Amino acid sequence: GQQVMQIPQYQHVQEGEDFTTYCNSSTTLSNIQWYKQRPGGHPVFLIQLVKSGEVKKQKRLTFQFGEAKKNSSLHITATQTTDVGTYFCAGPGAGGTSYGKLTFGQGTILTVHP
Amino acid sequence: DVKVTQSSRYLVKRTGEKVFLECVQDMDHENMFWYRQDPGLGLRLIYFSYDVKMKEKGDIPEGYSVSREKKERFSLILESASTNQTSMYLCASSMPLGAQYFGPGTRLLVL
Image (cartoon, rainbow over all chains, first blue to last red; front, side):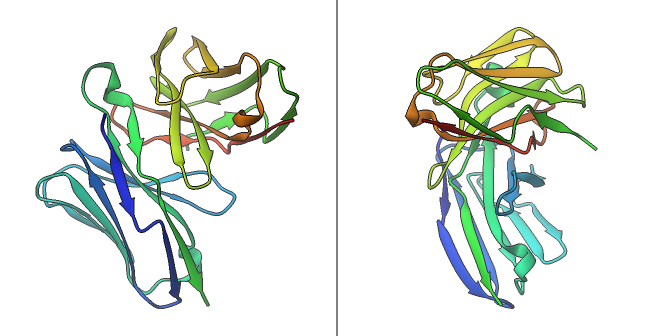
């Protein structure tokens, strides 16, 4: 079945440093979604990328979808303590009734040291 | 704002008990999901429903069943709870191919 791999599993940074997490799929994706889960919280939708090579920005966050639509990245510039949490990527399942399902990566746990 | 609510934030049950976890969403979403989340394993899909009375197994359905009698409500049932079902359970809803909106989660402890 479809697999979504995410690296690194953990990342510790000093406040102000940049951070990147990478997501790779075993199959071509129609779109990819990114979520953030704060400690003790639940996953919250950040963004969806659909087009090959698409780049979207949300303030200090930059999301990229690969040309082959099999990989994606999330880059945070100048991290802040409010960026702490787990970042997940997720891709949709195959066709048919699976079209509503998502396969989540294992997540990257970001710790920001002040 | 989309709201997804879950019946309990914390639950303690004994081995062998039947456990019901309820989830309600208020956005008229077609799709609803149940996940469990364990450290190091990410989010694993238990069951998924794409319409009333319709369900589909996820990656780890063993030991669980679901019920969706109304569009807004999706229940997860542990027929006979076991200690390896101690976990955080997250419900989510979405439109087809849309973003998933998660509830606050139920932390279940099975003794």
